[in-house]
Length: 448
Image 1 (cartoon, rainbow, N blue to C red):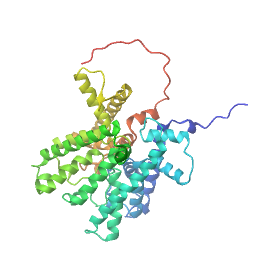
Image 2 (cartoon, rainbow, N blue to C red):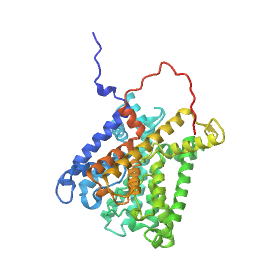
Image 3 (cartoon, rainbow, N blue to C red):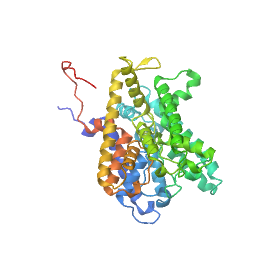
Image 4 (cartoon, rainbow, N blue to C red):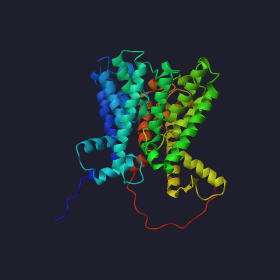
C-alpha cells in the first residue's frame, strides 16, 4: 500500500510560507481599508490606494498616498495599527503568541519558519526568544504610550491623548512612521519638544536594535557579557547615529527652510531626530522635501543600511554593512580573516553579506530606473523614494501621493521585498536548492 502523500502546501519551504503569509495579510488589509466603514467620506477607497497603505503598514514602512489622520475613520486607523503590529513583530510571532496562550505545542515546521522569520542561525531557544519578543515589545510600547499620552494631554482632550499615545507608540517602536496628525505633518509640531523627541527616538532605536540585542542588554547585569552580534550592532548603531547627527547639522544649519529657522535647542533636537529616523522609522520633525541635495543623498545611504537583524526595521542591516567594512579593511591590510572583537567571521557570513548587498543594490537601481521612466520628478527624489521603500523607512520628499498607479505598484512591491529581504524572497521564488555532488577545478581571474 502506497504511503499517502502530503499536500504540496506542507512541503513549502519556510521562506515561501513567510512570503505567502505576508501577501495574504496585505490583501486582507487592503480589502478592509477600501471599505466605506474605514473611510471618513463614507465611500470606497480605490483598492490600489488601500493595498498600498496596507503594504506600507504591514511592511512597517510609513509611505502614504492618502493622509492617515484625515482619510481613515477610527476603524480604519485600528486596521492600520493592527497591520503595523503584526508586520513589525511578524505574523508567525503573533501566531505563536496565540498558540502559547492556548497551550498548543509548537511543531518542528513552525520552529523552522520562526527561525527564518527572526533571521536566526539555529532553532535553539527560538520559542523562548519569541516569548521575550512579545514581553519586551508590549512593555516598551506601554512605556512609550504613557509618555506620549502625558505630553499630548496638554494639547488635546485626555481620551484623544491616550489614543494618540498608544497609536504612535506602536507605530514608532515598529519603525512604521505612520502618524495621525493630519496633512502629512508627522511630528513637525514637536520639533523642539524634549519629551516627544526622547520618547520617539528611544522607541525607534529600541525597535531597530533587534530583540537579540535587547535580550542581551536586559540580561547584561546578570551575565556581565554581550554576544559578538550585540557588540557589533551597538557599536555600528552608535557610530551611524553620531555621524548622521553631525553631518545633518553641518549640511542644514544654514538652510532657512529646515534648521536655519529654529532656535539652538531645536536645531540640536532636529539634527538628532533626523539622524535616528533613517534607521527605518519614517517619522520626521522637519520638512524632508526642503532638505538640500547633499543631505538627501546622505540620508539615502543611511536608509540603505537600515536597522539591525531580528528587528522591526529594514535595509541591508548594520551587521551586513559592518561585515563589508571589515572585508575592505582586511583586504587593505593583507589579512585573510575579518576579525571583530577578537572573533573571526566565517566565510559563509561574508558571502551572505555580499549577496544581500548586491541584491538590494540591484533592486534599488531597478526601481529607481522604472520610476524615472514613469514619473516626471527629479532623479534624486525618486532615488530617495525607492530607497525609503526598500529600507521600509517611510520618509518622503512629498511625491508619494502624486505617483502614478504604476509607480504605486512598483513601490508596493519594493516595500514587500524590503520587509522580507531580497534573499528570503529569492529563496521563496527560486527552485529548491540541490546538493552539489562535485566541485569544479579552481580558476583565477584578474580583479581590479
